[in-house]
Structure formats: structure tokens, C-alpha cells
Amino acid sequence: MTKSEVVEKYGNVILTFDYYYKYMFTYSGVADDGAKICLSYGGVPDDIYKHTVSNNDTHKFSDAIEWASIVVVKNKEKEIYSDVMY
Image 1 (cartoon, one colour):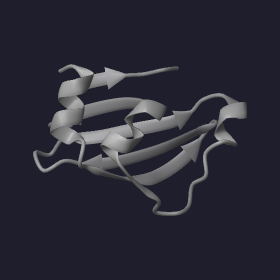
Image 2 (image 1 turned 90 degrees about the horizontal axis):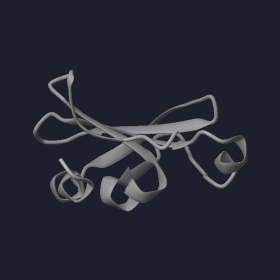
Image 3 (image 1 turned 90 degrees about the vertical axis):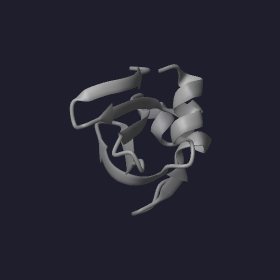
């Protein structure tokens, strides 16, 4: 799938803040078709201070797609899209 196809298909999925690890904030959500979307922001210590996050913070996938690395997995194993910036 291309990035535009992923946004068209999964753009309305709500992602919830999951965890912070090694300068990276990770959000995830599950689409109606069962695809799991993981979106990570950061990776560089100077960048993480520009991002404000709270417990259970949510973002619509289509609004957050430009500021992070993305992985979409379906059926727990088949990666259908990946755009990793780090």
C-alpha cells in the first residue's frame, strides 16, 4: 500500500498514547478490519521536548501521519505499510 492509500483507508482510526521509550513516544490503535497501527514520534532527544503528551492522549491517524514513523500490521504478522524515519 502507498502512504495515500493508508491514509484513505485508516485515516479515521484513533490512536492512543501507549508508552515512551528511548526518546520515542508511541501511539497505537486498531482499525475496524483488525489492522494495528503504531505511530512513533521522536528518536532524537532535542525533538521530544517539542511534543506534549498526557496519559491516554489521542490523535486521529490522518492528523498525525506527517510527524512520525508508522507501521501498519494486519493479522498480527503481515506488515502492510511501513514508513520508519529512524
